[in-house]
Image (cartoon, rainbow over all chains, first blue to last red; front, side, top):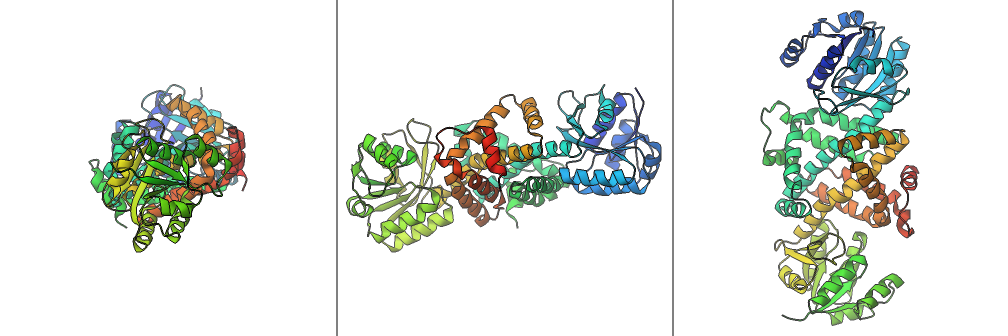
Length: 280
Length: 280
């Protein structure tokens, strides 16, 4: 097996698990510390990532770069890599619409960069059989090989750029779409003074559902700030496929109203969540 | 107990079960045969409903009228009853936004008719503990008493017109909203050639989910023609409560695309459903 020099842009909670998985499979894994937060610093040091300092250095050092960032930053990260003259293999593993993945792929092709489309389903990859990195593109197998001895599961789903992103979009459309829908329903029920009655009816259908729903709606708040962008990508995906984007534009609105919970250390109570939803 | 003379406008699959429940509780139950379909005729005869022929006759015969119809027809039925000079108690048990229920209530008050807001959750009420008629309004208890010895469960949730409709809207927002969302997701996945991969990932999460989802999407088609109007009512409910209506406007679009399955006798295959969704 060829040892790759892999740069992770940028190791957040998910990215650090991807970095650790590549390390575990025997590869050299780099990050770029300049301008990153203390949280990111701490994560990278804890997992002994190699610090290339700047993205520019990573672009000249690494054979492969993997972009793991919030969807709104995906194109900027790709542009930055191109600007620094990277000439290896670039993986976009972000939650973006397939047409955006194809667009980034075209930019990469013009710049002489090999491009692989990726989509991650599941949480940070610390346990086997829990997180899947889906890959598509002519060089997708080369990326999959970087994680053979790690808890990050990989699956190549074809040579076509956009398929991995399409799968990620369709999957998240349900999980994150229904979390937003449930939040909107509880907000509406609260506003119309029928929340207790709704919970009671839900309990008649399934005794576990009310508590599960309350937990989902409370716990999603911490990630709401970055889900808004993902919902907009899903809406664009649906529209491009000929289906209505309105489900996920509404979900984006819900997550935008919850974005201020980003910095909160404790999971907020349901009352606080509903107040945020109902404050215009 | 006072024996009520109850008119059901109009006994479809749900309405006939409401009629039978009132009969079982000892009341005289009427319907109006003029202009109704052979299906409705057959249902009414099978359950020995009293035929008042016209809505006008029902308005002069009955002490209580219960409207059970598709949401788009709710206001028309109410207007018709007023035009015929009804002077008893009118229950709107339809899936309409609370502001529309309040509007109908105001029309009724002007016409001297007692109004009760209703919302039915569950399928046709042939088994106990499966279908709830929620009621709100000053005279709600009088309506609840009409079903004491029947499989139709009732619950009075206050004196305020609009609460029963609000509860129905919030409940259906999830059940019918997610059926439409799943249909849209499968349509998108089909269009982007990742449907098999999506089903596989869903199976990893929950082995029963793919088959359940396929069944939901196929079986909802028969009722799609009347769900579109209900989704618009839910969207209006959300908007009036200060939450985004986009989830259910998108759901209305999905059900509109599936409306042609109304006349189909057999449950269509998934391929036929996805074709209908993707034909603009």
